[in-house]
Image (tube, rainbow, N blue to C red; front, side, top):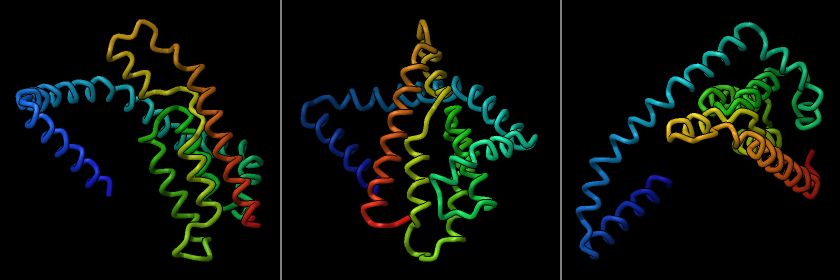
Length: 194
């Protein structure tokens, strides 16, 4: 569905530039912006590789398991339907840790593994369980302490103080997480679903 939306937007843009006589703008954009996008990706890549490597070291060293044990009391309150020693809790904790470091690319494998484990304990295989929905909310609106990708973008574009967004980012993502989880909780209570 998203591909159709993008196709529609591209066709509208091309049609508008054709009707207004600005077809040269489209050609210039296609030729120059591809280069700029590649340069931007190459400038961000080292930071993402570094933090992804750190997350891999944390996983291999058992640091993520310790983090999972640390947040287990909170996770068991957020996910009361997941058995205490289920692998899903560890994957959820790892996903949260990666998202806190602003590493969506490193968080994705943990999120997929968590969903796979949650599907194994799901009674209705064709419907998302309550735990799956709560995890999706937490994953989407998660707290970010170090927005790695945003910092890399700000550095790549020559920001005078790229780290000035850290505190506002923490506050904003904390509020979005809290709001999402509260909404999830109230909807769950309204449906009498634990």
